[in-house]
Image (cartoon, rainbow, N blue to C red; front, side, top):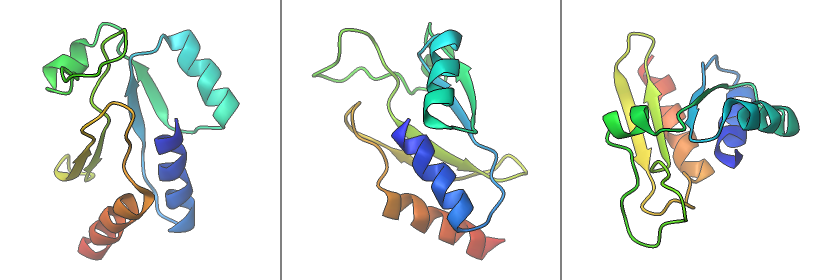
Length: 113
């Protein structure tokens, strides 16, 4: 959730229009609860079976895993035309993109438009 909050804050800070979509292994009920608790505006989709995660090659199969399978934390910036502009992936399931890394990607993307 912290990563989504950072994206949301950067979107406001930079005054840009971004559609945010998050895919989570949580249930729809848990997602709804978390969105309300954290004031998140992103569209959040449930992938409890990790079918979409696996199809995209984002299933975490490394060592030091938690008791349940999780996706690799990944941020993908996609243009309105569906072109992938930037991808950031963590090596450990507890890591997320640093705010400065995300901001640099947005600055680069904005400079390209």
